[in-house]
Length: 68
Image 1 (tube, rainbow, N blue to C red):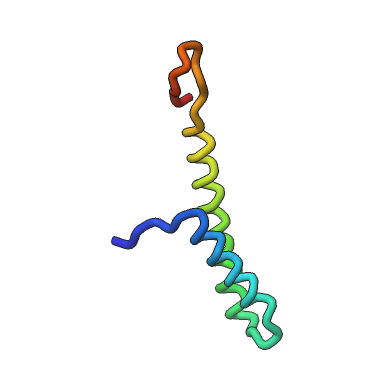
Image 2 (cartoon, one colour; image 1 turned 60 degrees about the horizontal axis):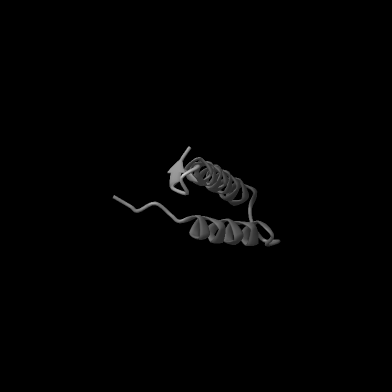
């Protein structure tokens, strides 16, 4: 089973995909494949960010950290 990419790794893959899409000699088919992969990576980033936001801790009145 493959491990899940970190947010930083996902961003790096997105940057690589963008670089490939900026190449002049890329075919339409390859562009579309890279685009689809990029959209999946963006979805993964959004899910990771949403998860982190939900796990953000807040201080309660007793100065204890608790999840909300």
